[in-house]
Amino acid sequence: HFGDADWDEERPDEIGDATWGEVAKACCVHDAKEWGKIFIGTCTALFFLYFFLVSLELMGSAAKVLGGCKAGGLMSDDTNPVAGLVIGELATALIQSSSTTTSIIVSLVGADAVSVNSGIYLVMGANIGTSVTNTIVSMGQMADGAQLERAFAGATVHDLFNLLSVAILFPLEIISHYLYHLTNAMLPDSVGDGEKWEGPIKKIVSPFAGRVLKANKDVIKDIATGKVENCDAYYPVLCLDGIEDYKHCASKCDKDAGEEVGVDCGRVGLITCDKDSGECPGFFQNGASLNDDYISGGVCLVLSLFLLFVCLMALVNVLQRGLAGMSTRIIYKATNVNGLIGIVIGAAITILVQSSSITTSVLTPFVGLGVIQLEQMLPLTLGANIGTT
Image (cartoon, rainbow, N blue to C red; front, side, top):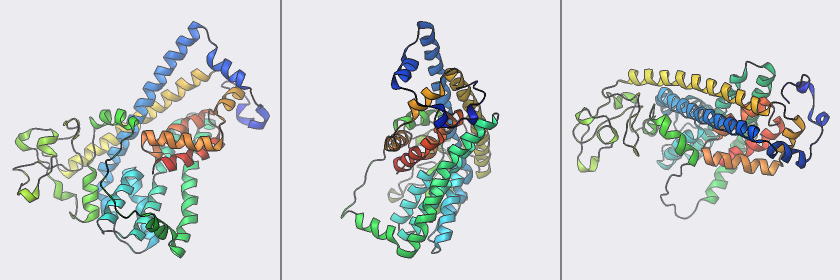
């Protein structure tokens, strides 16, 4: 596969099909020395994959800090469907998370701040805006022109699927309002409060990233719902007795009990503390101004991008070494799964990581390396879009 001079010019139908016996032999028949190399390579790949996911989480938090105020101010009950579509797209591009944007839209609809019809257009825009992350990741393979071409093509599968879906469904919704009527018919008689589910991968990645920076999503929601006019209402940051932890800085005041900020509870801005551990991240500071939090978000964004590209290049290098000498026929046979199974795999991965953009971002380097064929990205992307709901 690697080192094959004309591999880039070959088509899958020219390569031929391997047998499952060949795949099993290439996978499982090794001597002790080879198994040792496989174990070390696997551990190294998992190490860089973990910090790759940490960098994506940190980049999302930094984007929320830098764009949270603007994103919250964008969302409103605009009667123009095109404006709603663009607002949803911009808001998601600013905070790098369609899940966050969608949850805010749901909160706005629940508070009657935005109508259901406007919310539908905002969600459509959010699905377009979430396609930015994997395109950024594909740029990490620019050292090799052929890899960059394949990786970028794999990344744009997600982009084009979302764009084409909106291109078809958007005019249909304007004409018939079928999504509004369909969701209205699906609404149960009574709705109770439920617990928020967090994927196991997020539980592993978030604590480490949260020690560096943790974005305060409540700021975006409060501005979007009109509870506050702008971010200035959250500054300066105030911690009781100068103690930097969740209890003294980020715990909310009970207004019904007459509690006051600065006396009974603290105040945090765009950067908050972790409720579970009670600790504040490294870039949190007592007495910080809005500009201080913007600077912290900017520094973390640069750090996350640097870490992302370093981990991506290292991960690609480890995978290249591990697959060196492997037959293209065997790789294609092992990764060429049925489309329906691909959808299930994409949905399962997304349920674990709780983000379709992370799923497609992780798969993009594999497309660049030629481990996953471009045709396989469509069912995986379909599954990722199902899993993120």
